[in-house]
Length: 323
Image (tube, rainbow, N blue to C red; front, side):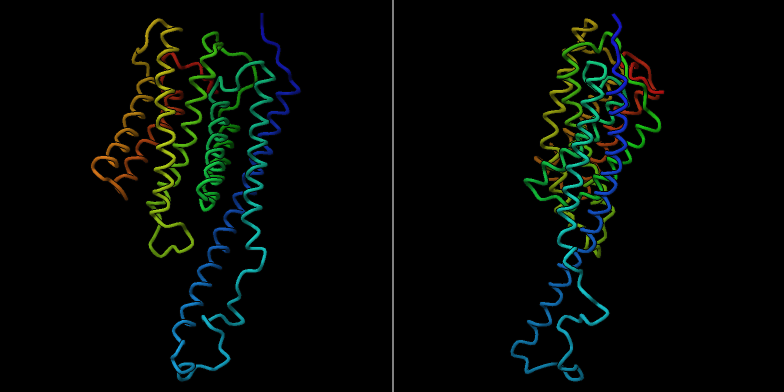
């Protein structure tokens, strides 16, 4: 019996995706302002403290320096950011949570519209992966204070959703029989969560490589590497579980655990490269640029597995409905 699609909920899901994109863009702008002005205020305050310390016991101002000159070189043309600079960060976080809620609502209404789990094709999977990446950022920010990554995570999520809407969107509808299984919840959910964590690690890794030593407004390289490593440490066992669950599902659906399908091969390649990254850090002490390059290669394998394999290869996973 064909599944009846609730057109109203499907339309609501599409509208919530557009709202999500807008909220992520507004959050990105707020995070950028926070990164530029809040951190610049901290830099100015530290710079202002140094001359003040230098004059202690020094017998007054230096020759040729007016007694009324402001400490730290701030004059009428070098004003510190206003009080709004301390509030823009919390506003950015609030916008992120609103976008997260809209993203979640879009997934829920899409699933309810067709009475199934809402990741049965590439469009739904990319929407879910963007949700997972933002979720990873927001929940890690509660523990590790990684707000400095906000602008970069939000622009990635907004671009990902825009790509999905523009090139991958398909009408809500039923899926092939192979996907009508509880293994969708187990296997695909784990892959989505791990992919979100790996994507955030990849963003931190790219920033690590492009950051200049003079970029005082960006987080330090050790901070970026620490965030990437934590995300991968959390995501790797989840990805491992996803690969194992996929093999179990393959045995149930097709009668074998492994069949050298392109999706299976690239999922395993991704696992191997992330395992190499963690092994190199734990045993050989790899850190810095070398370790970052390895994890970015792993992230590239992940993205190719999630998107490229479905576009360029066939196989048993070719039911992803790429337009």
